[in-house]
Figure 1 (cartoon, rainbow, N blue to C red):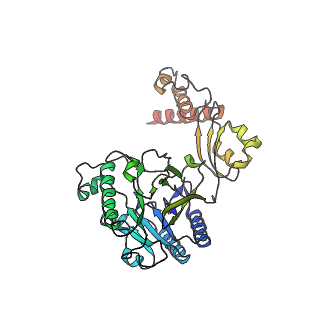
Figure 2 (figure 1 turned 135 degrees about the horizontal axis):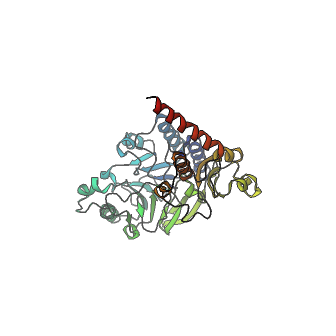
Figure 3 (figure 1 turned 30 degrees about the horizontal axis):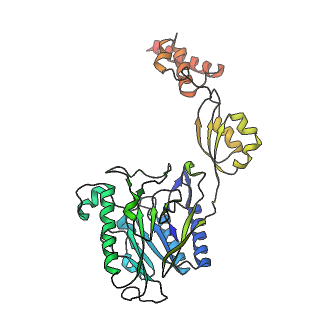
Length: 392
């Protein structure tokens, strides 16, 4: 099973997601047990940050114990959000329990081997074998010299890494049939990004061409959060949960591979149940509060854009009376043209007095004129300042 981008410990617009992430892990463990999945792949960004909290580390422990207890082996690589050193701690010890970590550059051409003929002698036998390689996140500026490349770019370091894997495959294929799966955390050409991924372009060209993965039986990619097929043998599993409203239309899931003695067979999608729906709404405040069309969003996390000509007072409070989990509120007035975009300095030039200046500023930043109560409060404040100045 190909998964990636768990981002354990991440929040969603200020809302903690540990419970939702635990629910996903429980779904995954149940599926692995029920379907007798042999190997679970995690292609990077296991954690959301290099220094995860204690409760987050415990959640990964819960996941690994559950997956191995369900009968699966785990092959895990580090992503750009992970600390490769911390994630790779105790790798040799964990391997004895069926958890294979590939977080170090020196290990990228050291595959995890699984026999495909029902035997147990994977390393040293003569029957067909599956070799799973893990390419950890490669920061070009840090690994270029170790990989022997002159240019610190994503293309060059990834080309060097895949060349090492091909060399190892060629050596192993001389005496037996070897089928390959490669994990890589990178931005491959043709992939569709979302708002919740960190830009990888700093330090070199961001995207790597798909032909770098030619010849491998299957390439399990991580980094992009939308599940997508770039070619029959190169795919992103995407994140198991939505981490931005740009993912509202994603169908979150994983890829399940059948691997037999003859090679990679069927690849099919597995979908995960979302703990909470996402809704992206747009319209005038009164329409959103009254229209039946929006009833389905009442229990969802909401991103709402109001199109009222003037910014309504207490907009967030009123919206949350119907959509209590409104997390993002934006304003995009309908018909806003050149008049609305007049610079504040231009408005200031036509102000007659201090009160006009204050009311004009309020209108500029809020999108509607000051009402009588607000204008009276500003006038009172200005008068207090004037009287205080006279007393000095």
